[in-house]
Length: 171
Length: 282
Ligand SMILES: Cc1cc2nc3c(=O)[nH]c(=O)nc-3n(C[C@H](O)[C@H](O)[C@H](O)COP(=O)(O)OP(=O)(O)OC[C@H]3O[C@@H](n4cnc5c(N)ncnc54)[C@H](O)[C@@H]3O)c2cc1C
Ligand code: FES
Ligand code: FES
Image 1 (cartoon, rainbow over the protein chains, first blue to last red):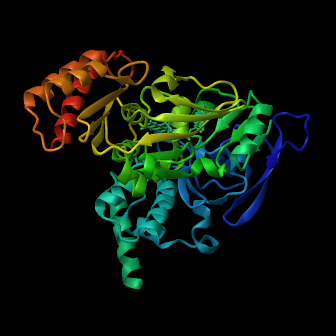
Image 2: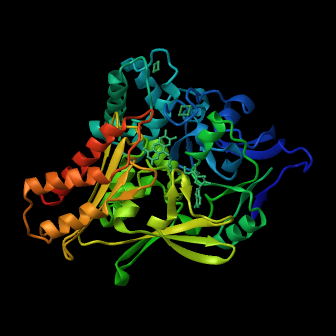
Image 3: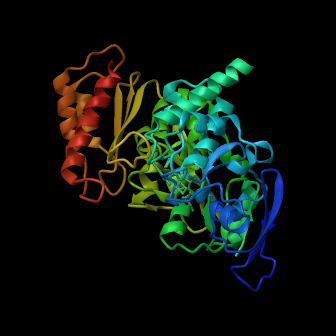
């Protein structure tokens, strides 16, 4: 049984464990057990791509991939994510280069204030990986957990269609 | 305070018995909201995600039953074989939260929380599900009607956990309907699951969000079975469907709260009942 135990049995809220994020192992030290993955990524690991707004799973701005599933990182207990593969928006493109999805969001005007954007980008990558040619209904359904207060969604949907078309032409 | 990570049911029984005060963590979609926003302070946690048996499901065709592990997420019930065998459960699963919530949230978590608005629960009630529980004294089977005992209260004893749920595979029609303020990401204002066994001429309807527990409208069910034939090939008189809706509404026990009013809920549940029954004949 793999039991994850505190390094020092004395200090109750000081924990140490490691997380595998974007292919790299990060040590997490002095953490409190109740910290969400969102908090640990942003405040401890210097990965502020995932955004926090509601912290209750409603807005999707904190979306990351854990073991190939798109989930709200605010609802993942970070200390329970040991032994998983975590992928954040920072890890989608090679060496910080923009992915086709990010470029399409820019060219189609799917970004305004940008707060929701990382969550949408991760959700769209996940969608197109599992369903390369989604219908409009499938796009809407798969992005229904992401809220955008600026764009009105039209340009975001257009960006998804653009990438799906590009990928079809290039394949 | 550690996170304990058992990898199989035997290890889970052992760590839960050794740490009876520990909190079980499945998808975290209920529990982490408590921690993030309601000041809940986790102490020892037992993570269920690596307990392989809990994430499995199986069909016993000779007994016409399906058994679904507590750790199966909604995403796996929405489509595929489970959806084909238990369509009402798939319909309920599709209404839960958003894709992110359905990827993480589990059947066992819905039973652990036991909210009257839990979307899987009316389906379990209408189908007469059995909840398989494991604890320090071994296994125990609890009928769903005895499992949920109040608002967010279930009959689990210390160090007991839900292993799986077993449901009959019914010949006939089944469906789930839910009213809320929008399509995505909505906790139900009123919901209902209707099962019509066209071989036996039997009907069951269970109501969510209109009482402290899920309510089976037994009186309306018996009235309907006396008033019309429910077997395959029979016709439904619209006035019977309307009267069925009225009787179901009478058996609901809704309250006013921040999501809706008792009056609206009583009205809505009658409409849902009438609609589900009508659909079952179309
Ligand atoms: C944004 C959002 C939207 C939501 N929308 C809906 C909705 O539309 N419909 C709906 O029904 N719910 C909804 N929920 C609530 C939640 O997603 C469900 O109740 C879900 O089934 C919980 O499962 P989980 O695995 O995430 O549970 P967790 O949060 O991990 O656990 C919930 C509780 O159950 C206990 N538990 C977990 N597994 C077991 C087990 N095997 N045995 C005993 N106890 C156990 C835990 O100890 C805890 O008390 C929503 C939640 C969020 C955040
Ligand atoms: S911050 Fe996680 S869903 Fe809003
Ligand atoms: S661009 Fe501002 S919230 Fe989406």
